Image (cartoon, rainbow, N blue to C red; front, side, top):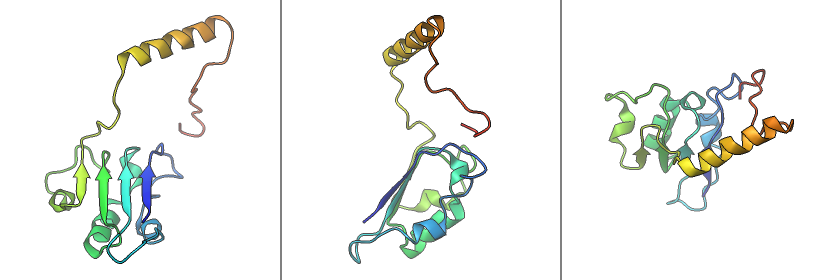
Length: 127
């Protein structure tokens, strides 16, 4: 059984990329094991109507979603009714303040010494 994990930035190329067409291509190892979709990237990369229908018809065996097309996830969303859906409110990242402080210090050192910074955003790509 396949597990598909979404951690993509939201760009015009990734908008709606996780949809029924993709889910239907995921592998099943048996009749009782259906694929699982996990998304902790961006809600706009998933098509929630497709997720709902794929959960209903068994194309997906389960989901774990930390991001949604509309945040917070509306109370009337059918996703709340699935026992095989784990839903969290955009809190998947664990913040380690010590690691963050070390990262900032390293970036400052790189800047002062004329080295390129790490993880620079390329705005032309959208991430």
